[in-house]
Length: 165
Image (cartoon, rainbow, N blue to C red; front, top):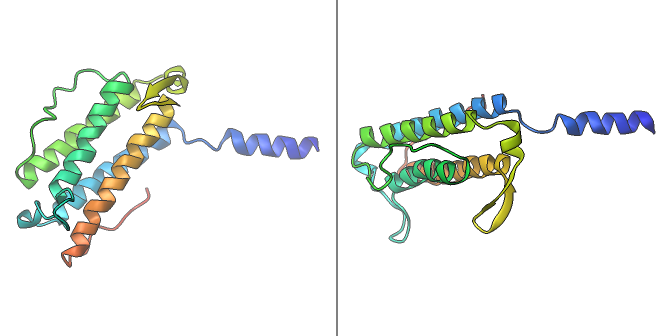
């Protein structure tokens, strides 16, 4: 029984992603998001599959801007200097916005201590740790990047391949 208990403890104590692993995943997400933007032709940046949907550019702008908004509001991020009201109008501006927002997220995340990551905060009416907020931001990016990828496919274009590492 003691051996079984030790095995369970060992497995669960290593189940969480470290910040180093998360940051590697974050950089991979940034590269994939930039590849998604690059893949969509200039003349389809405003494509939307339905009148009520966000356009391709709006999907990517939203996922990027949310990194800054959530990090600044809930992860003790410093003033970003990024104009979240400005809507990128070209592919080059969109790529620059993606880079700036992901880099801001990385800088903010890397300053958090283990104690700060474990601290519970109120976020959107929920009580969660800052570590959970990191997961929320990452999931939000994945969700909207996936929508943007579906827009690429809807136009008969092969999207960039996902790479895990």
